[in-house]
Structure formats: structure tokens, C-alpha cells
Length: 337
Image 1 (cartoon, rainbow, N blue to C red):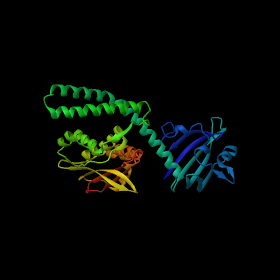
Image 2 (image 1 turned 135 degrees about the vertical axis):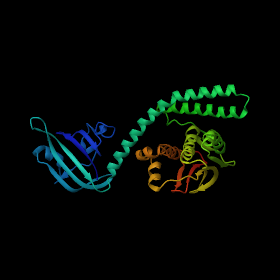
Image 3 (image 1 turned 60 degrees about the vertical axis):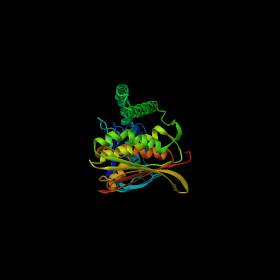
Image 4 (image 1 turned 45 degrees about the vertical axis):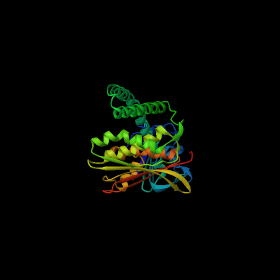
């Protein structure tokens, strides 16, 4: 059973709001306080009159069974109860509205989506602030190790990659916190070169877990993209595979040029032989739902990847089944977005 409850004053202005038992002072309902209720949900009518206003005027509660509410989002039916609200002197000062929706309600879906997005945004800003100090410490350690072991070309190359990635991430965080993330820096990106660098970056982590990473890469047309954003989108997918695999697991990374819907794309494919996911988990993770983030810890990364890929005019395809591994395919257009 889904629904919400709100209280209005004599002017039909919302003074409190609850949804699914969450108080209005939380992130979800506070934005509706001070707004006429009919600007938030469809006006509740009875005999062509506002039922909420009628209850305030005559003090008689009313219940509407299987009430059908129509709005631009569609319709929903359910039970609505409107009760008068009195002050200490027993004078009516407003009304309380309770709804229990039994059929699909797109309005409620939109409200829940807004609330989840707000929560995600707050957590993202907190995360962005929190990573800056550790980033500086890691960068300092990389510079120290590069100087101490400068006679080892392989280690120096790896430290250069780490230092470069930390600098990119620091710039990304700076843009994020300055709310100028929409001002993306598009440039020509060599996808095979980018994938080789990512594989080198995660190679130690994979080796520690006894996971093998193989690649099938060839020369491909350059794409126009924000390299920092796109690189982290791909890195999210590979990190998810590493986290999901047990010792002895394998990851394959490949890239090719394909035609899809009469357009030329570069297709990046990342597959693993892990346990995979069932359909419900897959839908929750790719949508960035709060529940999937709690249970898997990986939903937010895939959600970001999907948003970044779509922002570049591309598509994200995920094929995963229990005990059959996971295949993620990223399509990005060859032409500039």
C-alpha cells in the first residue's frame, strides 16, 4: 500500500507532509511546505467543490473510496480521508489528508524520484569534499616512490599514471564543487589508448585478488568526449567486475567499430565470468536506486556510468544473469555529440 499524508491550513497551504512514514522535515517533503496543496497533487473534488475546503468549513470528515485522481501525469485510484484539524480551543484551523493508493501513481513515483535524487546529490557533495585530502596524500606518496625508485622504468611509468589520474580527479572534484560540471571539456579521445591506461591502473588491484585482465584492442576512430568523465565511467565498470569476482576470475576488455541505428559507434565491451546478477538487481543498480546502493554498493557507479554515456550521445547495455557472468557494452558515436 502506497500513499502520503499532509496537513493544510485554512488557506489550503501545506504545513506538513509525510510520505511512506517519512516526516516532512526530511529531504522529501520540506519543499512542499508553504505551497497550496493543489499545486503539488491534483485538487480533491466532491460535487465540483474542493473537498478539503468543505471539511474546513463544516468540520465534518469525509472519506472517498476508490477516488480517481487525474492529472497530467496520468491517473491513480485509492482511498482518501479528509479530517478537520483543531487547535487547543477546538477551533478548526485546517485539515489533514490521508491517501492510500492501490493502483500505479506516476505522481508518487516522481516525488520519490525527486527525493532519491536530492539524497544522492547531498551524498555526492559530501563524498567530493571527503576525497580531496586522501588524494593529496596518495599523490605525495606516488611522487616519493617515483623519486626513490627512478631506476625502475616500469614503476616510474605506473607512478606517472597514478599521478596523472589523481590530478584529473582533483580537477573533476573542483569542477563538481564549483557547480560548473556542465562545462565539460570535450576533446578528441583515443579509446584504445585510454583503455590500455585504465588496465594498467587497475592491474595491481586485479593481481592482488588473483584476477586476470585480457584485452583485444585495435586502432579505432577518435571520439569527441570529456576524457576525464568518460575515463571514470569506464573505470567504474571495470572496478565493479573486480569487486564482484573471486580469486581465479577473468575480465576481458575489447573495443571495436560498429554500426547501430544507421550511425557509426565505437563499442567498448567489458565482460567477466563472475556470478552475475538477477533481473531485479540489474534494474535497481542501473537506475541508481537507493536499495541497490545499500545491498551491492555498486549501483551508484553504474548509474553514473549510464548518465555519462548518455550525456555523450551513447548507450549503455548490460547483459547479466545469475552464474553466467556480466557483459557491459558502451556505445559512443564516432561523430562529435
